[in-house]
Image 1 (cartoon, rainbow, N blue to C red):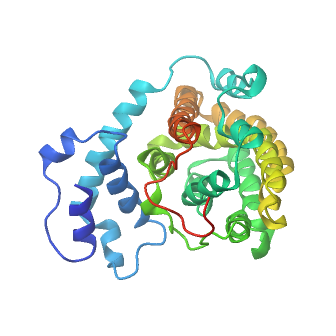
Image 2: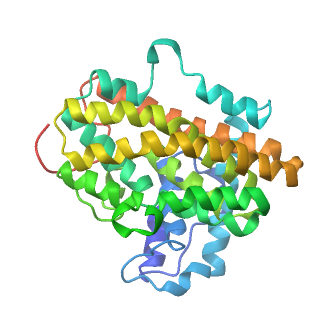
Length: 320
């Protein structure tokens, strides 16, 4: 199915997946997630040689809508329901005793350089566009929520300095680890669990009706970022990664601790003061983010626990 979409984008065929194919594809599977990822990419930087007019091609949009229906139904069925936005955020802040199970905990305590490089390569699909989809929600917000969102995004984009844009800092991290800094370089290496982490924020960002879910996603990222970043910075220091690699996570320890307060007190509180009926959607965004991140963690930790790569193809550079 994804191969059919790719051939259409490349201008090699007019064929698109059939309704039967779209209706039976696994919502978290590699076929659906890759097709969804490349269709979403038309709204970001596109692809060399692909007609930019295809961004709003009605046939491709119909395919995307069917894929989104499958993905959305699975997310809403699998994400834990119930509770308020404030309760859902409080749960995220309550880390398990002893740090059991998390990727950042594993990398801090046991991670080898090859595992840190794999993690960095995979997360590049997210971090090289990290703040971009959240900007889509800005015109859909008002008052405190809009002002708070823009304040956080201003930091994400380097406070007006190109060299401090967080995506640029992540590219510097990749360079220190002798990985490609090219946008989308590791798409072919990414398992479906990583693709789902990235397609989730694009799905939320592209739909005004999902503005509450996008705010929930944004909040979940900011709330969990600071402690995880501290562990990852220490893991990189332990493995003698370069200063630029460490800087990305060191920057997020301090910045995201501030961002977390802004998101909770201004963005979420401001949104729900204006549109209290969106509380359940904010919770959905938080829980869906938690769901896809846990699926990715399960994939990574299972592979690394057996001493094997979690990637679909090698990232190159120094042997592990």
